[in-house]
Image 1 (tube, rainbow, N blue to C red):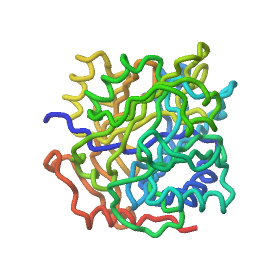
Image 2 (image 1 turned 60 degrees about the vertical axis):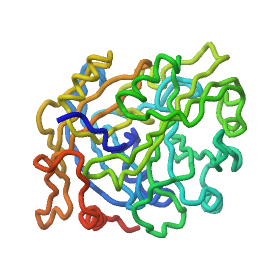
Image 3 (image 1 turned 90 degrees about the vertical axis):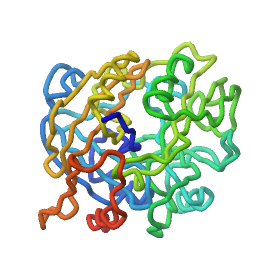
Length: 355
């Protein structure tokens, strides 16, 4: 089977308290469908957790509006460590998570009315669309952008969906871009601009000179969950005048405070592994066979981009619809690239958490 990138499955977020921050994500992003919730050790990630097996609890949450979900991740064997320095624009790694909105102005008004920590004002991105930045209670940075490719209108008052992509700090865009264009399939350059930018001025060190490249994909993603995950974009950003840029996760573990990985739902892991190795991005972690997440299962792997940002791939084998009834979606024998029927995706919404 040739590899298929089905979409961004989730953004991993390391937090000190899963339930506390998840409630905030439900209120502001409408990410209220629980796919799984599990506590266990993470032995396969030992190379990223200080050479010691760590314990954690993790929950995967989705929005029926569309967009990738959040894997909300909390250490239970140690404290979740914050960066000991201020993370600044241009630092290397997953800097900001893009959240899709049906109406960015309406989302801005809702966030402001409900006391969210908005940075700056409603501004325009280089593509002319409305945008703004907001911090969650843990200080993680979200970029609200105009969304496309909606699945269901849940009438959430924020008018937001879920993950629409990410902004990634890199040291050299020309050296980094092949991973995102060739392997991950973001072949289209929507803009490649250099200068100072009004929409970035509210961010730490955001008044400097930057090169920004926004990448998207022309064709709709294929695969079982592609209609729900929707289209996404990757923005690479490089500081042109800072000489003190550092890795966002410098001296910390995977799973610590912040955006810990960007995860893609994929099919054809063996072919993907061969392609990644051939292009200089070997798997650094590979579960090889089905990895059981208690209520969900699949095979997962990781690679690093040129600056060490972690990209995860998950080939999903099963997901729960109604665990109490033993109703699971089994995917291993389904035709690669085929969408699940909408009614089956809608059924996942039965696991909605109501506040």
